[in-house]
Picture 1 (cartoon, one colour):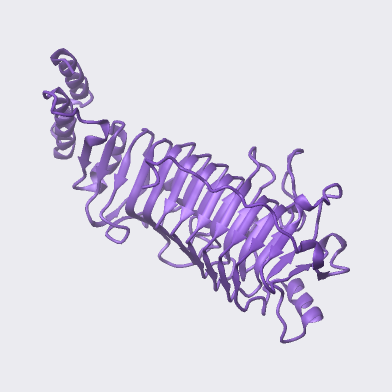
Picture 2 (tube, helix red, strand yellow):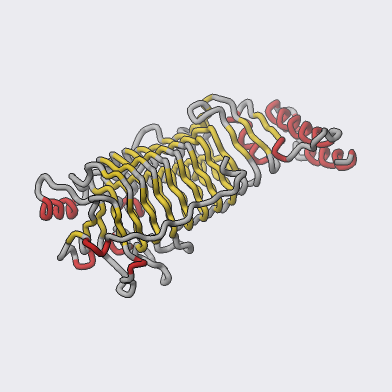
Length: 436
């Protein structure tokens, strides 16, 4: 950078501060950071020129400095927060691409919003090439971490939690990327969201791995998303452990999701979602639910002690929200589902839905259990070919068709029509720079 360019940038940055602001120590520190960043760019080149990623911003007092740093940061900035517990009374927002926000650990750097009075989220990000890691976000009024319309998103070792436990007044979503591409969520924790702890919606090319979701209504939810791998996660003590949904009033239809090598157990928490929301119809005791979604592969998971059923498969018509507007092109039927090589423990002994418990008693007796896979049995009348089937190749696991289309007039076991296999789905691939 030339001296003339440096001087122009420097005077421009200084002019952003009023004389009154220049007398305030916190702003003075930010001014000095701005001057330092410009002067650093004027230094003679080293053996290898510094990249944009070498811009480091160390925050000493997050409460007073973080939001301004998020506004002032240039692409390539790494904003580093120290260990500590920091209270905010309004949302934080980031709109600049290419930023990394880094704490000292998800139990060390804690952003608490227990006194929040303004804003719909804890942290709202409208940017691409964004990484957040080693931070906790607690007790927000609304969603904890929302990322909208971004590309190349990395969420790593982030904890979102409502510390009062399951409560209808809690925010809806913990970790919440929506309308994103190339998204990685790993080694994170989500607790007590009144909708979904970890949610990815209307997105493409997603990996959700190594996370723990506990005491949420939906532990992990993949909704209207194309190409998602969900693996090595622990979903316990939620109302429903893992959900793969298509909602009827969104512009993107989801398909091609692999759910594998997860621990899905003890998901028996009473549903505490606000009435009228889509997940308010999720039955407590659900291990994994597929609703109106296609090309879903479920394998090598461990299911146990989910009181309603290990796996529920349903169409839009029996999902409990069929009064919602349905786009003309929406496909309400779950199709091309492949379930194999899972370990199914004892589940289905105490369904939370009265109609399902009555069905259990009628078909299997007082001590009986619902089978590992329960399906509403609703199909497209013109899609009876094998390519659309729900296939099970999982030892002794069986499917129960509850015949919901006929008010359960003829519930029956699935039989040979479901003893089949589909071709394996492709793995999701993210850019090498993200998957490190």
